[in-house]
Length: 222
Image (cartoon, rainbow, N blue to C red; front, side, top):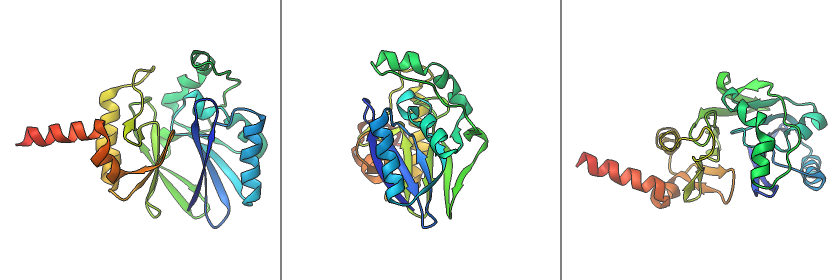
């Protein structure tokens, strides 16, 4: 499996193009927001001879969905998102205005990730792992053979996603990180929704939110 990162829109969101030797591809969290960014994404796809088959999202915040309508129209592909995050699409224009970002029409959801345990394309299988907390329907996509997990806005390099937005919950996001992401193993590459990539091992040692909880759990057992 191969991945490429393209950073789009005023929120500096990471959009990932993911493909394998069959040249079938999925686009994770399409944040392209204008003609220039649309063209950059299309150029990358064409340059590598890729055939997009699906747009998949870790969650429904506007900065991660700005480019989905364009992809659906351009390539005729379905859109996958947890139904629990549907309300975020409905209120995307309002959310965008708070951050000074103009938001157009939002896409309709074709595939409910609440009922989809894995995403298949080419010879690749992405496991869908529920990771609520940043949003109620947030998921991560994990590919065990490559040791890669797309964490969206749940886990960042030495930080975690916001939980003060509608539907956010701090206890949920920490349980998602501790129970769903850390067990993937120290060597697992973490490709987040914003910022640099990291590894599970690095976050276990240097993420202050994670280390605080882990140290407290150790103290409680002593």
